[in-house]
Image (cartoon, rainbow, N blue to C red; front, side, top):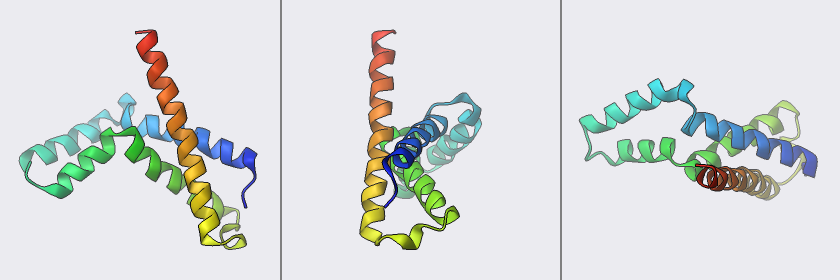
Amino acid sequence: MTDLTTLALLGLAGYRGTQLAVHDTILDPVRDRIIAWHERRQDSAVRAAVVTLISCVYCMGWWVSGALLATYLLVTGSFDQAPLLVHGLEWLAVAGLAVLLNRVDDALSQVHG
């Protein structure tokens, strides 16, 4: 099982990666293209799901956290060191911290305008 310090660092990285994917202006052109792609066929469930994914910190945070955890486990060679269920719990922990940080960030931005 991955230690708590590593899970915390992955959670922080998940928060930052989620902010990058959902909010940061550097990816505005990509998000704008995806939204325009959706507007050309608004009845498409797949296109609507993609737009929801890129605009929702909870949705994107889940996948960013999973990708970060999987990359960490594979790069360090520790993927096969624990059962898949344990890695699922680690994914929940990393995504949970990332979402918590996003909620704190949202709350602070509402307070500070």
